[in-house]
Amino acid sequence: MKIAIAGDHGGVALKSALEKHLDDRQIEYVDCGTYTEESCDYPDFAEKACRLVQEGKVTYAVLICGTGIGMSIAANKMRGIRAALCGDEFSAHYTRAHNDANVLTLGARVIGVGLAERILDTFLDGTFEGGRHARRIEKIKEIETKNHV
Image (cartoon, rainbow, N blue to C red; front, top):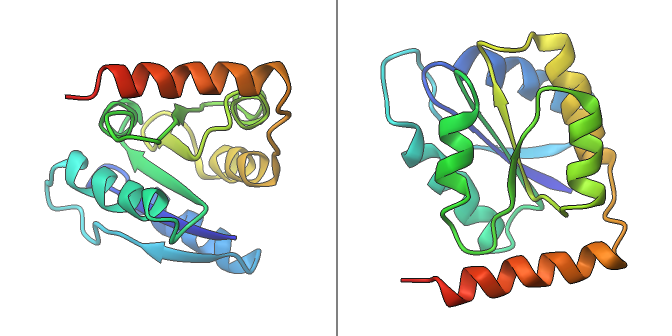
């Protein structure tokens, strides 16, 4: 497993903490920026990390901004990306199990480091259940194809 991780200026501190957590778990990652708290635009970093998911260079991406909302919106504009904003472990579990999410977004100004680590672990350790959920993922892909501009 290899992860892309990115954050904007509001997420840079939590991104750093989660990188240490990934190091502790011996999970390889690609740091897609940003590296300072200087104001920047979250869509740039969402696109950079999600592109790696699209290209199959990483398994998942983790995106962090102040609320996680902007990153989630930007990521979900990209074909094949199923990004989920999670603020609890229950949601992280079920977004992998039922939605086959390949991108986790987190709000650095909403949750603390300890909870973020538990959410990340739950997401990364989760598995897609398939079955009726696979049918629903296929419908999402059809919507994406029909509405691609």
